[in-house]
Amino acid sequence: MRSDTIDDQLVRLRDAIDADARALGFSSFGVADVDLEAAGERLNQWLAAGYHGDMEYMAAHGSKRYRAAELVPDTVRCLSFTVDYLPESMQRMERNILDPGSAYIARYALGRDYHKYLRRRLQRLAERIEARVGPFGYRVFTDSAPVMEKPLAEKAGLGWIGKHTNLIDRERGSWFFIAEIYTDLPLPADVPAVDHCGSCSRCIEVCPTRAIVAPYVLDARRCISYLTIENRGDIPQALRPLVGNRIFGCDDCQLHCPWNRFAQLTTHEAFGPRHGLDASDLVELFAWNEATYLEKTRGSALRRPGYRGWLRNVAVALGNAPTSQKVIDGLEARREFPDEMVRRHVQWALRRHGR
Image (cartoon, helix red, strand yellow):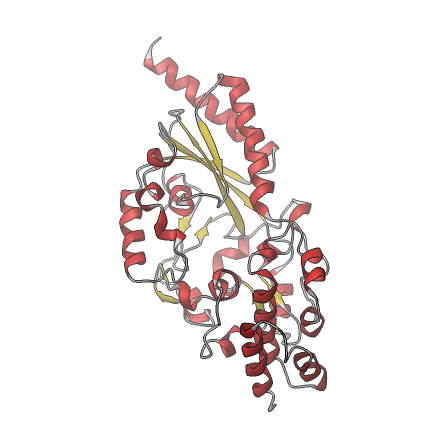
């Protein structure tokens, strides 16, 4: 068989995968080679600076993060996909952030946990590929293993990594999840995306805690997403007033990115808000007992910080809320909470209200 015939077959297979992916609800698709040595060097510099904070898993797998074949033997390509998750207009989100009595939750976490949801769709896609080509080597990922998703998506032409370190697509902004299939199929690789941030620095300027310490460099230890989700200890006192009403993650850098004027609303009902959490009253959330928390966050990324982390985050937001008897009473009800970390944050919040 001539090599050009094989190439033609691979091109047709790539086009078929693209069509199947869109039929399964993926927004975009690209193919990347798996040479990530340059990205790996940047990662190692970032880790050496300590910017990962307590996320030891970022360093735990060493070169497996940027040498795909060490993670999945025989991998030669990464099939990269995006899925839009934006559930509402950015104007509505801004109103939520500007209401200090309501809780702001990063929009990716309002609906179902995307990990299992997208992995199931990737598996279905892989089965369709297998029906076309027969058994082949692959493994599916959605933020679920040591995979450098954004550099791979950038190489696959799905967008560039912006100064806030999120992936940006010229046609759909940055409100999307990224998912991958590592494979041994030598599909033709796409042309990597080109950076279009230019001289814009809006994301750096609007970051509440100044976590973007230089263009394309994020100090996670200052990032509200890290502080309210990955962090298991106290939120540093100096940063608490800057957290505002953000109780799980932060979207400010995306809200102010000019490219997000092209953002697409999701077509997936699974990512829509549940339990009214797109603008919930802080005092009401703080009154949840653990059973209510577990019920309301079933199948949700909001489980990540655990109940004590949830109360810690809401206590900080209540400390930043306008003083009212309702807020003070809500905090007083948790003054003697059994967990010492929660008590410290409650006491801080009460001091903010003169108590």
